Image (cartoon, rainbow, N blue to C red; front, side):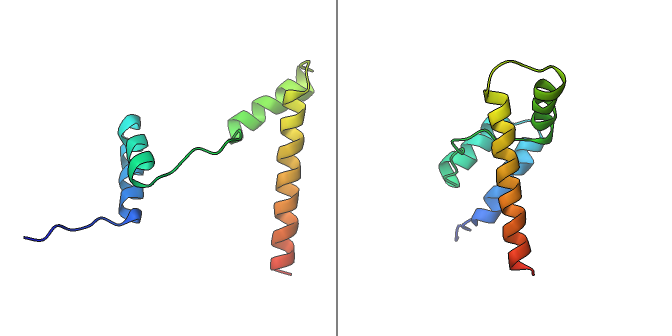
Length: 90
């Protein structure tokens, strides 16, 4: 009897499937132990987080520099990515 070795792609699919089923701890265990994924050391801006930060800065006029700095860094990153893509496909 031979054991089948799972590919990294299969493990990624399995982790995603578990995540969709709400089994977050199991999905995270696969990602950290088998796939050796580590979280990025910066804030990841999902659309909802971006919307709430925009509202804080421009509508609520929230005090402090952190939300403004996050928007600025997000804009700069997006702008640099856009320029790089334009150069690649020009």
